[in-house]
Amino acid sequence: MKITLSAVKCDVGGLGGHSKPSERLLKEVKGYVHDFVKRQYRGLLMDYYIGHTGDDIHILMSHIKGKNNRDIHQFTWNTYMHGTAVAKDQGLYGAGQDLLKDAFAGNVKGTGIGYAEIEFEERPNEAIILLTGDKMGPGGWNLILYKAYTESPGLILQPDMFDGFAFNIMDVAYKKGDRVIKLKAPERLSDLKALLRDEHRFVIESIYTADGEPVAVLSTERLHNIAGKYTGKDDPIGIIRTQKRFPATGEVIEYFKLCPYITGDMRGSHRTALTPVKKNSNMSFMDGPSVTSALSFSVHDGIFTEPNDLFDDAAEFWSHIRKKAAQKNEHMREQEWFGCAMASMDELEYTGIMEKLEKLDKEFIVRESKKEIWPTEKETIIQDPPSGD
Ligand code: F6R
Ligand code: MG
Ligand code: MG
Image (cartoon, rainbow, N blue to C red; front, side, top):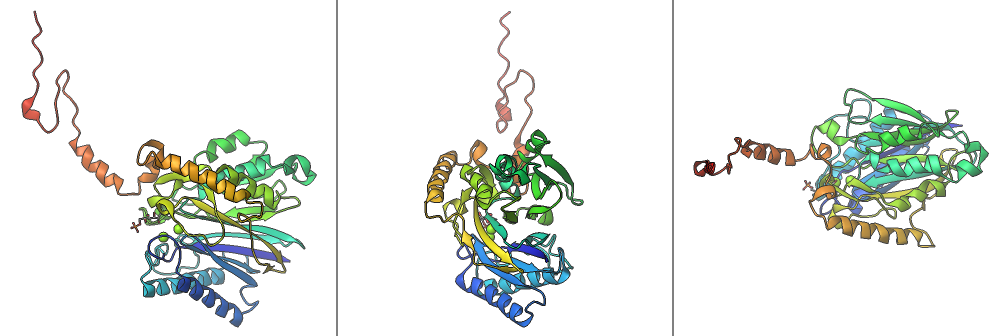
């Protein structure tokens, strides 16, 4: 059976800041979706799962309506509008912050809701991972996914993976449409690196097998492209199919051990180590750090099992990695506002620092040659010393 998985996420308000939704907000969103599904069971949705990562509420849905289906997108919009009303009623912070449009116009694309959709012929033992990030942009996963699909052990141990994988990469700085490039690994490894190193501009949108089977899909929305200013970080969501001819669940998540420094965190303007966290986590240090949670599910006839929280393991490997991430974050934050601790200028472009820089720009002067001029004391110009001859 061909099914579609739609993963959507939106920040409609946080408790005491940008940390997490309130219990009532989550309960109301779950109740809204539950009532809808009860009324229309197998009419629109086959199944769903709801949770949150930081202040973003995510919904994973299964259905047979295909990608970009108007009814699915309308339902998503309605659900987050309902959540916004609850958030306003409770006085939550940033109520409706990601809903950047006043009305729904057929698709959630461009509304501020992040989404990732994948359609495929369901395997009898379909295995997937739901990746959700907070206080980070979609390119924050570039390095981890690059490594999973170009360096995993399966690429040398599983003949069905020997042909490698194709990456669709989007230039998210381009605003007139979707500017994309398809690069195949292992043939184009250095080209992939040349683009993916720039997490702000080039973002993995989807990954396919060499013969075109969809493997992974990630949201690529950039809120500042929609709003024209900083309105919150993009906080991505992704769906990844695993096992057999795809990298195994463990191979996909392995590279989260790297905890790369990425942009996000406080005001979306700082660099912190991407930290793997347990499901339904809150934010703490510096409104951050940048975090990702990973849940695996089995899917059969469109019905999900309960999630397995991949960063909550008995061996405590991920607790150990979290300590490393915390240390990296402590070190980076010792730099405070200086140098690489803050985002690059092209990211800060959407924040208030531009106003400050414009004002400062007016105070600059270009020194007259050989004359020492202090800008605010032009009257005390130091004369050239006597030449001595
Ligand atoms: C980052 C984030 C927070 C806010 C910060 C200021 O994505 O959401 O770090 O940017 O708390 O929030 P405002 O401007 O709403 O007071
Ligand atoms: Mg928020
Ligand atoms: Mg968020």
